[in-house]
Image 1 (tube, one colour):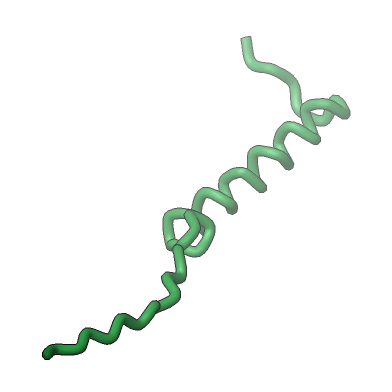
Image 2: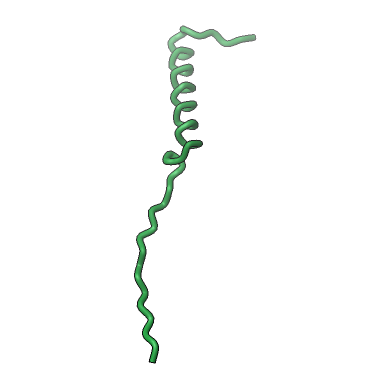
Length: 48
C-alpha cells in the first residue's frame, strides 16, 4: 500500500505595489497628487 503525504505550502501573493511597475506607478501618483495640490491652491494655471 502506498502512502501520499500532502504538505500545504503558504503562497505569498505579490501585490502590484511590490513590483517594479507598481513602484513606478506609486511615484507617478505621488507626482500627480502634488500637481493637483498646486492647481487647487492656485499655484498652477490651466492651459488654454
